[in-house]
Image 1 (cartoon, helix red, strand yellow):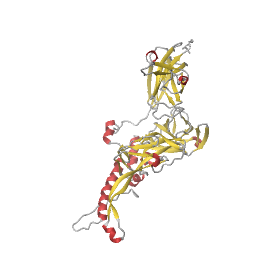
Image 2 (cartoon, one colour):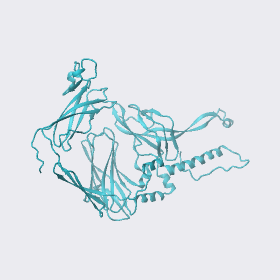
Image 3 (cartoon, helix red, strand yellow):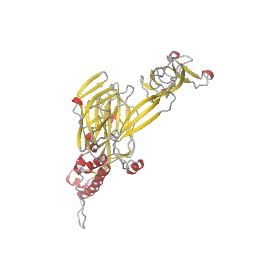
Image 4 (tube, one colour):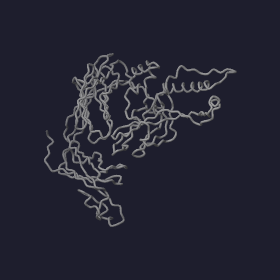
Length: 528
C-alpha cells in the first residue's frame, strides 16, 4: 500500500437510474475497508493477536504456526495453515558465513486469483486479454538481517527514551530511561546489550553524570558495568542501575555519559568508544501514568499515523551458527520486540488494567550483622519518610562448619537431541552439605546396566572413575561415550557445579554422575 491515509471517507450515493461502474464498486469496498482498518490501527495497534509461533523444524528449516496479526496500517494478516520453509529460501536471507541473528518478518500482501476472459479488454486489444476475478488477501514472509531501531516502535517513546550507545555488525548497546519521574523518585537506567552468536565475551563500563539525578548510594557519578558470564550463550542481556531525582518539579534533566567515552571489551580486545548518547527525563508532579496518557492524547492524527514506520511484524529472532561454509539454526525467540495485541478481557483477568493507587518508587538499604550459631535470624525495618527509603537491619546466624566429613550424591545432566562434538553441558548448582569453605570433589560416571545377561545381579550398577574409554571393546565397556569431567566449587555458598564435555556423539538423553565431597579435618574457629 503506497499510502496509509484512509481519510477523509467518501461513500457511494445511490439513486434510481444511476450508472454503476467499476469505480463505484471499488469505492464501496474501499470505504468499508478503510474505516475498519483505521479503527484497527487506532484502537488495537499493530502486532500478533494470537498464534504465529515460529519453531525450528531442523537445522535449516522453520515453521510458522497458524495465527492472526494486524499490521501498522490496520490490515488483517491471517495464516490459515502452518507454513514450513527453508530459511535460505526466504527473501532477504544471505549466507555470509558468520554467526549472526536474523529476523523473520511477516507483512500483508495481496494477489490475484481466478483469471477470467475480459470482454471489455478484447474490444480494444487484438490479443486475448484476461483479468483476475478475485483478490486474495494474503501475506509474505521474509528475513531482515538488521535489528530495527527503537524509533520503529514509535509509541514506546511516550513512556521511554531509548538512545543508541554503540553499534557494529556484531554488537549493539542501548541505554533506556523512563520519560518521567516524580521529584525525589527513583528511575531505572537500563543497559541492553545485543550480540551475535560466537562473538567473544563482552565487557562494558562507563560513568553516568547528571545535574538533576544522582546515584542512590551517594556520589556524583553512577558507575555502569557489565561483564558477560563465562558460561552464558545468550545473545541479549539487560543490566539495571538506579538514579534518584532531585527534589525539583517540572524540570527537564539529561542523563549523559561522562567524557562521552565507553570502555568496551570483546574477548581480549579493549576499545575506548566515543558516543553522543544522551537520555532526557522530565521531573513532574502527579502520577507518571497520567502524564504519559496526556502525551498520547495530545498527538494529532497525523502524528499518530507517522509514529509507526514499519508495515511488517517481527515474528522471531533466529540465532545462527556458522558451520563450515553453511549455517545452522541455534535457537528461535518468538516476537522479540513484544509486538503483541492484548485482548482486553484477558488483561482484566490478569489485573493489568486496574488503576494503581500510587506511582511512588522506593529505595532500600540493608545492613547485616553476625549472630552466634544456632540463634534465629532477625530482621528490623525502619522507614524514612523524607527519602522514601526502607532501612533493613538483618541478623544472620554464623554457619555451623562441619569438618572432616564426607558426603555423596548423584547429579543428572540432560543432553540435547541434536548434539555437537565438544560442546559443554553443566549441572545445576549442587549443595554438598559440608557447610562453607573449600572442599574436595571427586566425580565418577554412574551407570545402571539394563541387560538380561551376566551383567545382572551385583554388576547391574557400575561407577567409572578416570577415563572410561580404557574399558572400550571389553566385557566391561561403558554405554556412556568418552567425556571430560570438571567441577567448580563455590566456598562462600557451600555448593558446586559439575561440567562435562562430550568427546563423541551419543543417543543417551542424559548422563548420571556420582560425586563425593570431602573436607579435610581441621580446627575451625568461628570467632572473629
